[in-house]
View 1 (cartoon, one colour):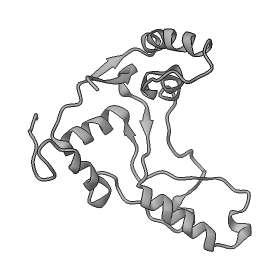
View 2 (tube, one colour; view 1 turned 45 degrees about the vertical axis):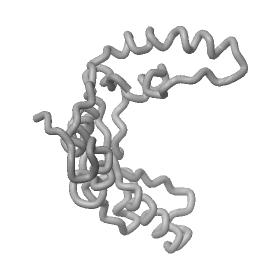
View 3 (cartoon, helix red, strand yellow; view 1 turned 135 degrees about the vertical axis):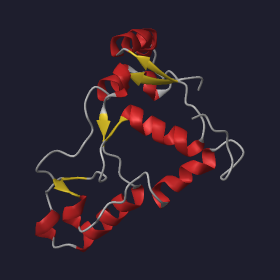
View 4 (tube, helix red, strand yellow; view 1 turned 90 degrees about the vertical axis):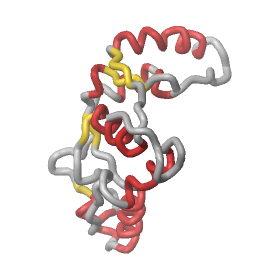
Length: 156
């Protein structure tokens, strides 16, 4: 993709969690007494909260490549999605598009995606989540480096 849109400056907050921590939480929930988990909602998030723009910078540093991120006002992004949405309402098959260019995605990016205060969390399931910017959780991203795992251009 020639650029990455950061809607409204990429200020939306997210709390990413490592997939293995989610799998461990799921496994733990199966081992727990049914009354402890049945009918209850758990919000699974990692230990740190990031703005989208900070996650983009983390990936850029890890793969040593710029993302060509562009700040896009959400109203402009929705306007650009208009023709696709118009066509989609008139045909019976899906119109190909990148999800990050749809009005639904833009609306999702207007709301912080973090664990609510007082919610049951991954820690309530006996899992201590790992930071995504340290060690194993971020290692797979290094494979996207130009030239391979241990190579890549620097831009900082």
